[in-house]
Image 1 (spheres, rainbow, N blue to C red):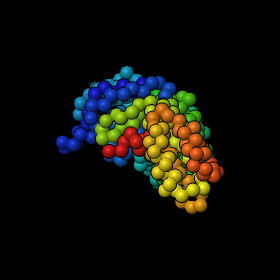
Image 2 (cartoon, helix red, strand yellow):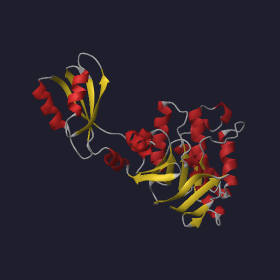
Image 3 (tube, helix red, strand yellow):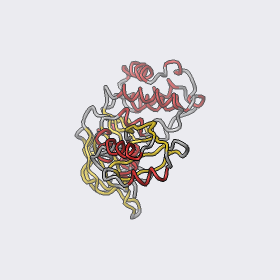
Image 4 (cartoon, rainbow, N blue to C red):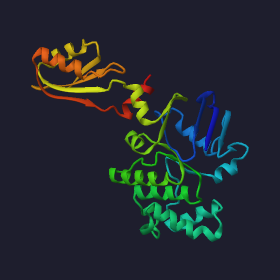
Length: 308
């Protein structure tokens, strides 16, 4: 669906995107992640035909974004970070206007409006003026707009920004449902959403692709041995010093002080530290209240991959 080869983009001598290559298969939901200023939005704007590349080749559904821009735009639904809506229009008026702009056949406009309103939970809002809607419902209108012409590819830039937890959950379920019918490229800073929604993750940093894999595999690559958390009755400094000397351990740190300090133990890549840590606790005669393996998260993997 998306093929990017040696893509670069420069602004007045600054290289925002540096010779990146990746592909997205039809039917995938791909998370596109990176710190602020890493090149995410620039890349997404190039894919949507909004910006021209400086170098490289980009195609969507087999069409070049530069030489076949109109063909590409017919196949893309793009929702930018700040959704551009006409706030003085009613929801129905706006969707009808956008459908006509996107050349939806006149006989199908009403059908498409009803379909996207149902998919986005907007049926009760169809007569409301957009300017009176909450942030969550405005995001839904933006999603409905992106879907009105039945695109093959949806490009969503921070679709849950500014939403409360209930609204984020609703938009997440909506994206999952859309993934059954569309290829989706999703950019967000809420990494728990990516873990629950995306089949694959692309991480960009300083304009370069740093990683491309499933969320689960990225976590395994970064933290092969995982993390163990212990709670023992002993001096925290003594526990950290002795645990940190174990061959299997990379480092240990205090999470919580007190009579029963809580210690986080980071294992070396590919090593499970639980046996060694438990054996040490028995040798030292410390009272043990907890020994748990902590599941690593995509957020931790992201930080380790993108830190300077």
